[in-house]
Image 1 (tube, helix red, strand yellow):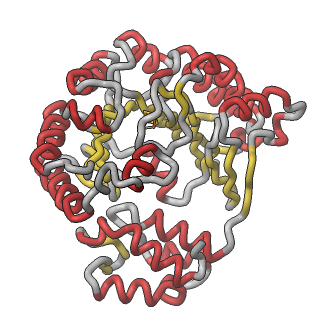
Image 2 (tube, rainbow, N blue to C red):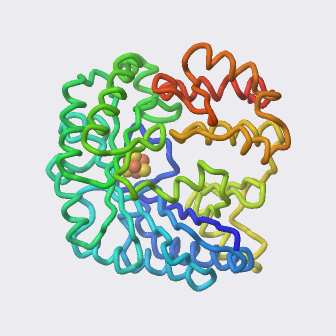
Image 3 (cartoon, helix red, strand yellow):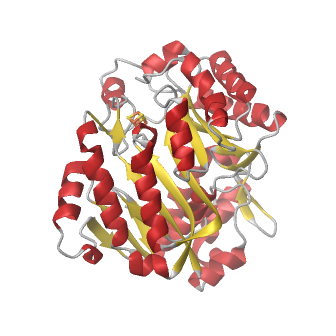
Length: 388
Ligand code: SF4
């Protein structure tokens, strides 16, 4: 049976952080029960698809899935199991914030079938956490990993953010060292991006705070690469490091062109070459799913489209280059029926000449190129005529 993954979006958060442009909302806790029921119903509408597939991973993202009750997470995992064959080693992952889940809740998530948890720690510095509007303390961040271990999780991750305005390299080093000292199995490190439509975006635009400095952020990325490698973490993706065997299986599905269902408000899915996006607002999503007479007609879907060949190639190239191993040119040709050099020759030649891309039997970003993933993919889109 062909593999598939299931992404479940949980849009609830205690506060909306000023830098966040995810589909996440504060003050909607009263909707959690109806939302869980809607997710379960939406999943039942995909029974015919899931029955023909092997589910290799279920990923809860958000928002803050860790702020759901374990019984709500259990109901959703059970709904997947009731219609699909979960692979024996299937990964069920969720994101949580430090300080919002007790040991009992974490143990409840584990009993619900969650196999892997990652905490949005972001920083171990109180001032940085305040700048990011995070509600947890460095102390709560420090107990998150041992708490998850005590709850029975064998795969525990930490997410960090670097490149904050005014952040010193020494502060970033301290956060990295604190993270490493906790011994998580997986560490993600993302550069802070200033997104339009966020409070941070407005503050930067109005000159209240300086935009993050890209050169400092580049130095921080190098520092992360060095410290994490020295501590035994292998970088397997532009922003992700893991101990052997703890790479995120769920995210690899995205990076390797695998099919996945997107369930929940604003979730994106990719099924048999078609991309789709659900209704974004949680209340509108719940109303559409709850009132639909025929759930198999996919009432949650707001927008669906089959990417043009150029767009599909650009997406594939962009995702494949996120992985450290890159891709074999033969894999591109097998997928699209055309050699990669015939459609992306100029981008590849220029990037190779600039030392941004390396080639042997695979094409991959060089160490320097990892910081330029966005620029490389923008060039590729332009060459393919897929920009915009
Ligand atoms: S907790 Fe995460 S998802 Fe929620 S608002 Fe903050 S950054 Fe966004």
